[in-house]
Length: 638
Image 1 (tube, rainbow, N blue to C red):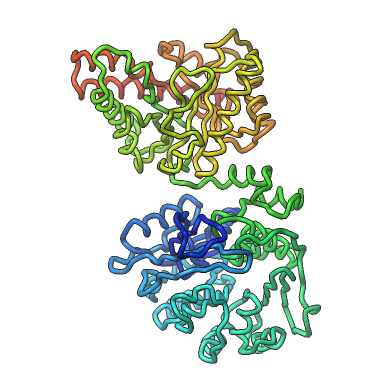
Image 2: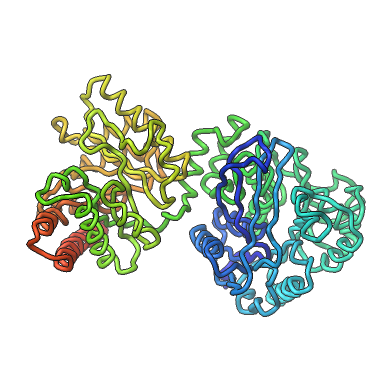
């Protein structure tokens, strides 16, 4: 049995994409960071479509190399083939979007890590695991990397794997254009044509643009070039023709009509960079699933359409759920990035930022409290900050490197703890509300347009608490929904997940339908939280009503966590027992039950640091055990 569907081989870089559209690369003021390089993009693209992928490449022993490795893992790509080069830097690319026809870019690849790939990096056992191996043209440009590619292809054929080539022609990566000509897609070269033609017989599938087949075939007459490739290779040839679609040729090439085509999609071209890698991802999905070429090309064209309509390369590629939704529904507006329903589906099914992980269970120690701590005897800002660092120590002691644990921590008092939590594997939520405000007001540091979120660490989850009730007057309701919507919109713009906490019991009486009514109202206002934080509900009917309200609007929500409201442990245990029976309730977020009494004793000097950490860790651990027992019981009952 093959454990991998595809191994890609070659370039791996960090792409820095200019965020200003319509200007020169010289004038870009800020950049978004993504993984890049054709084989790396394709490995991510097919993983999103449900294929088991891996990439063989090299990265530097530095922050950017670690970013690539970590992001690949988040995307579900096998990283066993990603080697670390101790001497060379990870490749870097700067890119911009000038207009629909101009996409300036600069490759920083001088002696970069992935160009140090050699035969020694190709492991036969690893190649034997794959159903297919995909190479890209750039790594045929240097003897050392070419040897690695040829060894991988020979082993693939030995072990019965299919082989594919993305011609991926970049003239300046073959030394045919200057550093400032990264955008160039074609420079004629008999030497490059000869090099490509010496390897084309090794492939079962060859994919390229018309210009790329020109270099492979040695002529700018596309049909003649395709025939020249056919003369040396029996591979299926797939020629990408931009707005004219793509054509697959399995046999003799007598003209465009002798090939097969698939449905295209009339969309606005926003960014062509990385579109070919998205196309190849969809094509591989169809090819490896045994679909006919018209269906495989439909997948490819759709994935390419997503890519050209969005910012970035890998981040633009669809999930399988998104692709299926799109193919079933069709194009409603040509600028796909502004299709609200489609973008929600994209966001909800491709969340892979630094905070992404397995959050099917989430046990959260919440110490984001500000007003409650400030009111305690002996409090000062310095002492409050020090205490929150003790809270973090307690959380990490219980987590012990395991998944499924998290914290809620603020920036006002707990800044040092918040920053120290980054990279620990904890889920991290960060509050935005002015404590106790009703109507809701946000922390002033966010700014009137919530622009302060641009400074947040990417793993931080934006959390806001809203005291609201279905019987709120129209003015209060409108004001609170507008504030939450402004924050939610800013969170999405900055790629941050969003948690909405609602507490109606502090406003008015509640029943089994209260939470559900509020949930529907926020969805109706265009707010789609990644997470909901709900107060404990004592009946299964109340939980079911709330879950029904969520799933009516978002089948891909992260889930719900139960808050504590300083309830005694026995009350929390009873509420956990009811909530844990519902899989969408992922866990809890409890604070004062864990730290309240400890904070008062520590601030008063009655206990020291280690005793405080031990006591909070014990309380937190006990709540985790109570939740896990309740969850296990709920699963048995189901």
